[in-house]
Image (tube, rainbow, N blue to C red; front, side):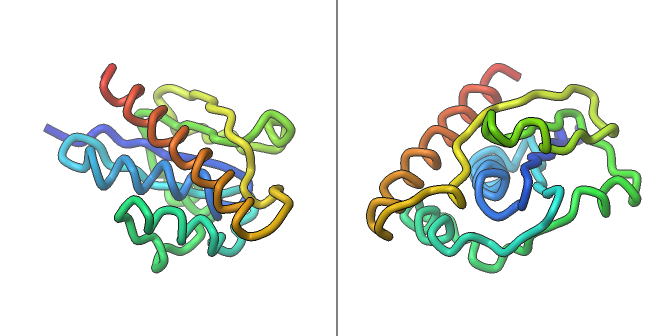
Length: 141
């Protein structure tokens, strides 16, 4: 049986979509295959890398990817899930090769202000919310 394919999309592919992809592949890789991409691929957020390492997942070698490259390659997904916050929702890309499109709104870690420790605490909350949403969604399939 083929794995169910999921694409997580956000603006820069530097944080939220990377976390969602990692959780799917780490905990559900036997039934699901996840990828992530962005509208304007940026640089992997080092605080997100650090936060994910706290869960035992190393994303430090991940690269940010361009959603348009995936489009040109003709990739198809059973689900395309955008993880942009409401403020960025207008810019969050739409991927036409999807069986079903879903939007999950999560705060953008790149917009956080404060000290490094304050940012890490907030990122941990975002990370845990993403993990819970992934778990909830995949358990219903």
